[in-house]
Length: 179
Image (tube, rainbow, N blue to C red):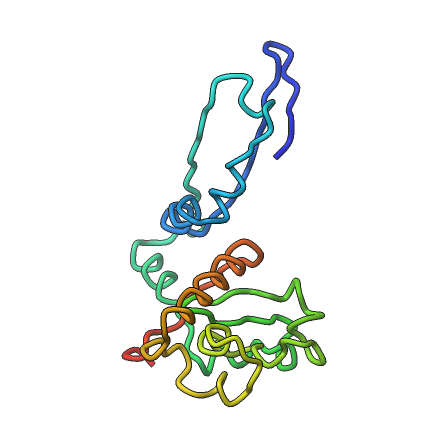
């Protein structure tokens, strides 16, 4: 955010954020990252009345049917995800607990030769939850969390918060029944 001078008042602190959906925004406001960021706000942020504005922007002027089609295209199969590995495409995507993140901004980590390239174009759920950089774990039962213990579930939740705070979610992985 930043301070905006206003000639008719004392000024105001303005924060602008963009979300793919209201659900994503609401999930963010319930996250540990949000709570941490808002636990010790700058005092000048609250020198005047608080105001929140929520605006919805539609990226399509087509029919309801085309909007529904666009919604479905947000789902990505594991095969589609595999094309975004930094080799076949300049974009680098990673699946994590059902979401697909664009980690292209961290190509030095996730791109070819990067320490975490093993996750590029893959569902990294199991490996991150287990805390291992093992291609066999990455490739076995992608996205399956059914056998994770409590500590691994907590690690997975921590990774989700980290990815949510650093990288945009560009879609969802297709559930297994839809693969």
